[in-house]
Length: 455
Ligand SMILES: Cc1ncc(COP(=O)(O)O)c(C=O)c1O
Image 1: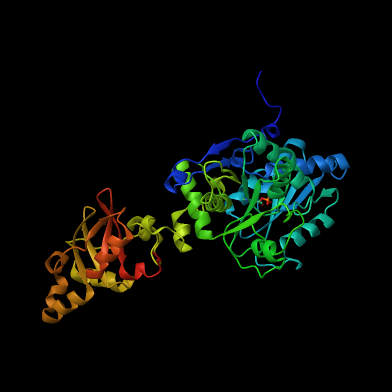
Image 2: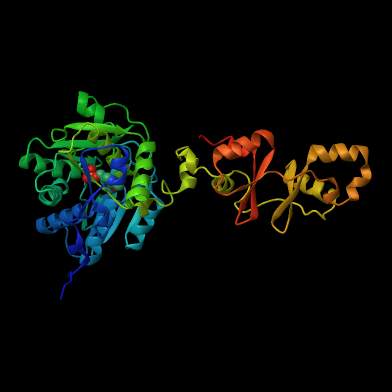
């Protein structure tokens, strides 16, 4: 029989996958390979350290039967630890910041872990910081183990023993560059150390969000003031024990926009559905690759799955809210769905047979000055408050007439896929446009709805 005795047997030995379309588009001569850590059973690179830190604790007698594992995590290490805890019968308490996606929190809870969420803004050393909170819960919980992935030697060791040899063997020793983000530093330090031992010429490249300290710290030894960024799991505001800067040759800074754009592109063009830190790594890999010839062979880490971020950067609505969406994806449908004030799907309109007095009352009630006239889901005309009032001044009896007798021509009707540019141009000459989906008018967009869009 071909089987695994438990799910933990599936950790590691992840495949390398060649990037094809994007490299061709960027005219890159070097080979870029994705190390698919998202294919681990907990869908991230952190499964490797979950099991290695627990193996260490069991061997040292620090973690005993029925014990509780406590960790400060951006989610993935929690998932890696929770996998092992499920199989071996431990309890888990994880401390996360409110920056972490709701998907990861739900995932951890569904694996039986208790989750404590603290503010991401809490400064290191203050009681609310996630490290301090985890340390306090550890002190207060009998028979508990707090691995502290930021300093635990079993973290980089897992990568020295597994990720490094896999990259070396699977590339037949031809790898020239290894690219990874730096959260705890375990991946880059452990894998990097192994690869450097095999061939000191291999370049180890750190991919770091703008706002994190690592680039300045590596280049000058000075620790700058960190500023916030949106990518999860990588970057720091202070140096960490497991991030060995001597192993790292170069650090490339990447913007949130590039991280998310490249992560989204990997899924659309290569079918690699990944998290934001993978986008950071890939952006850095592309930058490094531009200066290499055919002999260059870059391996970058696909840190985790995109499923953890469906409510975040894999959603056009979230990207638009953060002013990060590529202009070509800002369509009529998206503007209508995410505009302020109305709930999605709510279109205020009148019918051609309604009374003018009722139409005016509707405008007053909803505080709008223009209404589409809709019949059988199609636009047949429009009403503008100023136009009706002018007509009423001349003839008050029109109040009792039908809308069809006073209405103007319809606002332009555009499809849900209409581009931002098309909508903007129509709104230069019309007070509103209507959006239709499958030939049914579903929404109205006015000039003010475009004001909060950056494209
Ligand atoms: C999504 C994600 N990417 C990358 C990393 C960085 O890995 P490492 O901690 O080994 O530096 C982490 C670590 O938490 C992570 O959660």
